[in-house]
Image (cartoon, rainbow, N blue to C red; front, side):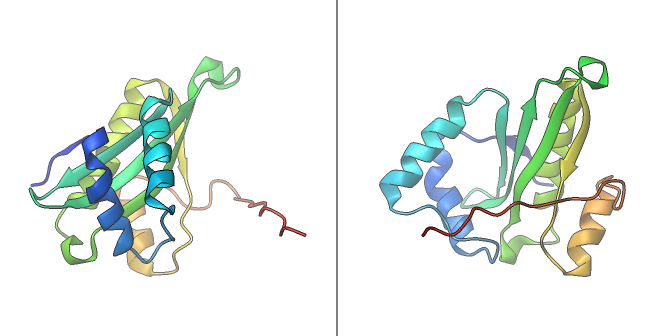
Amino acid sequence: MPVARLACAADLPALLALFAVSEVSAVAQPRERAERLWQETLVQPGLHVFVADDGERIGATCMLITAPNLLRGGRRHGVLENVLSHPELRGRGYGKVVVQAALEHAWAMDCHHVLMQSGRAAPGVHAFYEAMGFVPGLRTAYVARRPAAT
């Protein structure tokens, strides 16, 4: 069974390799920009990146963002983002262990709940999140897109 851990500075090349084979989104370019963003990520309070590797590559990753909250009895907000599994390693538990690690960390940080959204239409993706304890339909998600440059 794969093991999840917090990502470290040395994980950037393996993360970029994972992102390159992902169908989710384009990676930050050029490489120098990605390096600056990664350093900023690693020192950002309340931001945690989890990874699970197979010894040669990162099999899955996710990012947990937590923030203080004056409501909900003062319990933190949690948001799960950038959940990715390597296409060749899907179904082997890599995604499961990083999401479990993120949720355990959120509960340890006294989060009231963890929100996540999926833009994927594949039923298997939604079944995965539901098996991890996420319940669809409790909230309505809205997205504001950045206006096009004029």
